[in-house]
Structures are given as structure tokens and as C-alpha cells.
Image 1: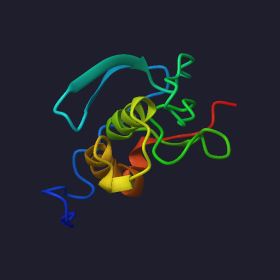
Image 2 (image 1 turned 180 degrees about the horizontal axis):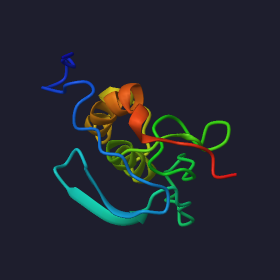
Image 3 (image 1 turned 180 degrees about the vertical axis):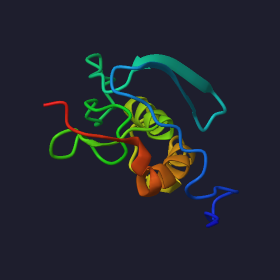
Length: 123
């Protein structure tokens, strides 16, 4: 097992796959201890983007930046939670981001080891 230096994150464990079109609750928190949850369809494009958001809302739930070349990739719950957090609280502090850094820490192992969650392009 590989332990991540932030908390007790264990790489490659507890990766929960999601499917494009699946309706699921995304849960994330804000640095001021405010918890959020929103029901969303994986892969959905969110049209009512907050003014402070620089996030491209296509491919919600896909691990990694944006949709990549064709939208294929690993789709997981932790990546979905991170996507939703950065969509509403867009800052660019990576793991040091006050609002979404903890969601990123949870999503890193999904990005690295989530091969069982791979979805090919829908084209």
C-alpha cells in the first residue's frame, strides 16, 4: 500500500466507478465547513455556470482536466466530487486549494489507478 502524505489516503483503494448518464449525488465541502450535495448526471454539461467559474463543465466525473481528446477516460465518484467542487469554487491551488484540495487528494488515486473505471468515447 502507498500512503499519501495528506491524511491517511491509500492509493488504489475505495475507487468507485460511475457511468456516463448515471444520476448520482455529488458531495463536497467548502473551507468554511459548509457541506454541499447535488444530484447530477455523470458526463452532463452544466449550463448555469457561476461567474467565478473557469471550469469546463463537459465530462463531469472524468478524472483529469476537461474532456481530453474525445471524452474517454476514468469516470469515478471522487473525480465527480472534485469536478463539482471546482465548478462552484474555482480556484487553482491544486492540493493546496482551501476549498477543493481535499477533494483532489481523494481523486488522485482514481486518476492514477482507476483503470477499471475506463469508459471509451461515446462517438
